[in-house]
Image 1 (cartoon, rainbow, N blue to C red):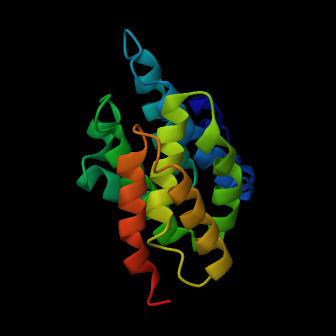
Image 2: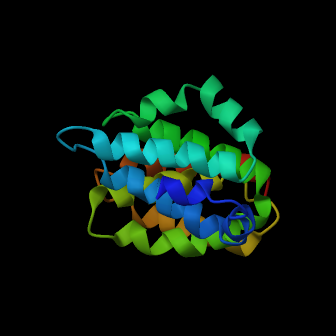
Length: 171
């Protein structure tokens, strides 16, 4: 998949489908956990870097380097912290993508694969901090976070998301 981001003039298509591609890559991180040899995780990590290079987002790459996010993405127990970092920086640079990201990622919150559910819960939890001007979207994300409180695997992300409500504003 990473090779497609090296094709000349692909950046326009990638930017038109930004939310779908970024969410697909994030979800892939969740499904590459616990592989025997680690090569799927390394492959998706390389693909992610190529994606940001293709979209000419050097500031995002620099932020993720600074936060050591690439290192944590290669772990089975800390990768969700890096997903939080990636979601944070994407929300900061692409507020126009909130709804598209939410609509694409939401079905995976109830998906069959735990890794995808963890990634989706992590993305939703972090998005709460950034959604300030869309009360309906904010309420939808909060409601989804509340529904995952009963899942022991997702409880940490749910609590983090509920804690982020204060960042969304006084209403």
